[in-house]
Length: 305
Length: 290
Image (cartoon, rainbow over all chains, first blue to last red; front, side, top):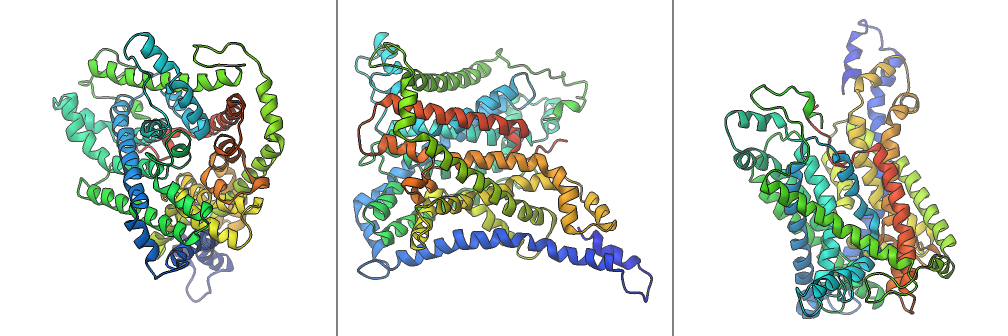
């Protein structure tokens, strides 16, 4: 990177470096100016609103500094949204990551149709919440194909209730979250040098031993990142909790509470406070996962761990 | 990806990989993948079928088929205007995010400087934190500035996650370009602008296109931020779709389905275009076995 500076030494002693070289030298400084628009933009539209929200949350319409936070944690209707959100987000993220591992492990090499399968997996990204929600209602709803099939084949007598409750939202989170987690895990797996596993195979290790002792430890950093990203996706569930969930009861997640406070009760102060709590919980869980990860193997994985 | 280029030692049998159905594990894994795709296919099929159905309740297939729901939805939700707004927002976001993001990505990819970690975290946070979390304070600020409800407000809000996204996608693309090429151009007297326009620009076109299409998809599909900052005249298609389901009033479900199908079809076209430029697994990390 400092090649340009090094060339200055080549100029004959006593003579000033040529304009060309001095410009090249200064170019190093000017390159950093390229960052300015991005940093200013994020400062104005990301950092400032965040600080503004924090300040707003500390200035409730009535009461003291931490009144909003006290209300949130003392009102069980609000406090329980944390538990509701976690009980949706954690299982969904865990499922998406854990189901991805064996499938990605099978698909890590080269084989025919690999490109087709990875392309097909991108389809759920295009679905959008509304089509997913409508599809779920029509597919696993009381009159949907799934219940019809199960009832007609006498597997069950009564249709299963799988929408407008916890399960509907969980399905929706898996449909949209699984492909994302899978593609991430697959890319981390492809980043592990296959020669390591071949070496183990030469030494006589079976596939389980190779997976447990070689591939899995190298994959853990990637899995931690994948879990965090999947969790963030699932944690912020808002539209599907309304569309296929039970937004007043079983799936009243924290984002619904925040939206309700800010834009239905027009209590921006409370809305901001709930947003801050939401952000804090999420960053706390991410810190926990990444902290756990740092106790595992740390070294070159070939990919960007 | 290029693992097969390395000649395997002769002890290990050469791997000509086709899906293995031989082992129990293979059957289970491929069965699960198959089940997921079957579920996905059935899910899409029900919505598409319903959007063409006259009536459909409780039977295996709709009673009869019609295509008038598409016309009805188009007229009722004023889709030509909604799509125009969506296109305006998306194109503005792509253009501005690229203009701000690519130079920043260049500086981050090429230079080590004090405070780089802080800047990197600043660019990572809007991607890590879900939009609904920072969207509420952001919308509050935009309301205070009287920008919320207008197209400008929606564009500004959508830029918050997309500028860092462009930076993140572009950094690996820029790192792949040998800095010696630029050094050579500099030695020959090219200014930074010339290097950008005549050396880096052409080399970065595939990356910029990939980032651009992905930002387009993200913006068209971005529900939370647009929902929080848009007004009646500045709603993009996702927000209108959500409003059609969740908002007040009774509508034929087929109309909503027709609109959802239109939305998904256009998103798919854009994603397939994006996939021509990038391999989905390479989006996240470059493969380290070259």
